[in-house]
Length: 89
Image (cartoon, rainbow, N blue to C red; front, side, top):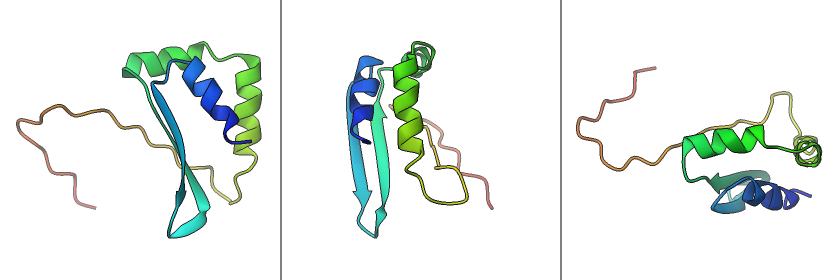
């Protein structure tokens, strides 16, 4: 089921897609995909079809746990001239 997301992501403009199993916890899967830019990612969300949304909902239904799946966004950092340390927690 989860591999159906590949077609959705690539049709939406993703350059690459993958699904990875966490070796320390085999029940955890991580989906990754690469878009050309943040704007391309946002546009892909606007172009989603009803069929795409059904696939997303089917995949989200596989999640087992009280909290929603964790989502993170990362952007490529070409060069960081003055890196700022993360805030202390």
